[in-house]
Length: 283
Length: 283
Image (tube, rainbow over all chains, first blue to last red; front, side):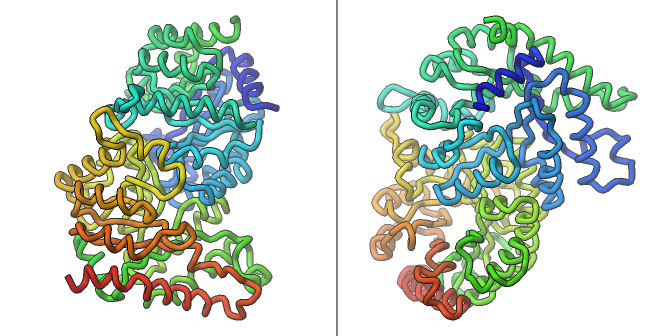
């Protein structure tokens, strides 16, 4: 099945564009797990399994971020590997890896994420050039999300720099991504931060067919109404990622049942994002 | 010990600026290993151990590239982890990870490479901004190599783009790296491709104190003489990375003893790079 068909299916099934980010930090996990006697890696696996099991009604996609697993060493990557086999069939899985390296290395990373761990999509950094992206683009059932503009303050350092041509670096990345989208079987989408809605609309004008991965809602402060407005020009499909604001409680000590807390927060974001999902599933 | 002191010590000990890149691809490894009955991961560990043991007279540093280990899944990362404990004390170890992510994720990657696996240095991508670099810069015994200009054809896509200010993206990265170098305890160096010697000199004028990691010699075609010229303005310390051209034979079937082949090629690059090492150790 083509990546975009699978994505549409997942969004339609759940009525949701919610992507739940799996960023497990042992020190922030519930006390009930921390004191369970399990090893740290076992705790992380249990935590992630519970998140997936109790949010899947609300989530079209899951996005584990490799950094949070790598921090636990080889045991953490073993957890990442086991998780990869546990996702339900009808969700989109995105490996948030932000990899970017020359061709022979890119081939090895592709082997890891697509062939070995069978992710539907991966996030990639285009800094070293688009010849570092093309090795991932051979299979139409796969997607890549190219970093094009992020929500952190440092986005001004490179992404928002204006080129002599009048474009910004982000504009250039969107143009190149649109070109990859036309030329290759796999789907080339973009990562666009939710806090940058005016600029997001500009970039969508350049690559309107891009699947979007939109972080920055929740902890990072992105606003749903202005995001919905910015997506008016969009012909692709979006996923809005929420990580910390779903998987962790702001008041962990007041939360008697952490699994129910996760479910409730996922339901809350599902409802909050409904107007955006409706724009795509009813359009 | 400060990172740059450790680096100077390693270069002086070996009379060499050679960094041996560990990019193990099972299909390219010697037949003797491939048919040994060991698992693929065991073969890779054995291959890398032999490389380290038989090149350490010639190499000031080793640089495993994470992609080649991740391609083997969690077992590959377990090999990476075991390798991390096997490097001799007096060499520089660089995790070639090219990571780049927002603050909380950067902290987790830093935990992996510096705290858990105890690498001396890591390569980083500055695309998302320099707030993604600063989490790595707290400890003076550590170094980071920021991607500033690479040797692959795609370097024109972003690195060599000219900004409205007249600078290139690479120039801007060099300026920001020099600023990080001044402000933080850890050492901020740069990755500069060996094939780009004219531009390399420009970037060194901006951040002359940078430790450099220079890939692109060997398989990628960089020239030693023009590289030496470009380093005239350099006050920091360089490492020249060679991976495939040392660890693999061009004529594997004609090679009776693969370990001796690796040793001979490392010795060859050591000798080739001597004029560059001399410029730093005798200067």
